[in-house]
Length: 185
Ligand code: FE
Image (cartoon, rainbow, N blue to C red):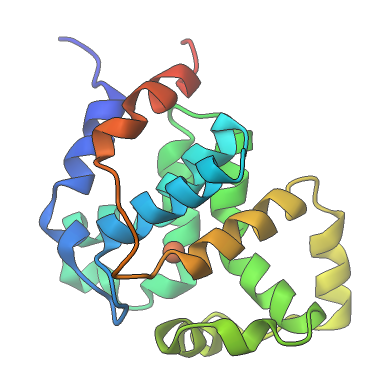
């Protein structure tokens, strides 16, 4: 039996039905992720952070494949599901920004005046499910995490990657970058 090729598994998720869902946004899940990765790439981010941007909502896609009953409450944990799934093949420089991207939204809402006003309506709604803005102590703990800054960068691309008029490269554009990040076993 040949071991599963993670890049192909991810390509299949991007081509799955769930990737065509909008989840209340102006672009599909696949377009959203491809746009986020493009913004990261254009900003000159390291390959691991481009990959994190590309894969930050992969938990949504995996949950959609698992079935609609799995989706209830998914906004509380799609980041954890995604990070755990990705940890099979990728290091924490990819998985930690993914795991922390929801916390980064709650952190930025608490610490950056005006940040909350740029959130999409769907993102404002999920904020309430996710626990609302962080309190001072929680924000302090978050800022001390070595991946806090990467998670906040990812969060800003996440917020921006919802433009129906923005160019969206095909998934294949990122295959080589992903393959280069898969850990040796
Ligand atoms: Fe997102």
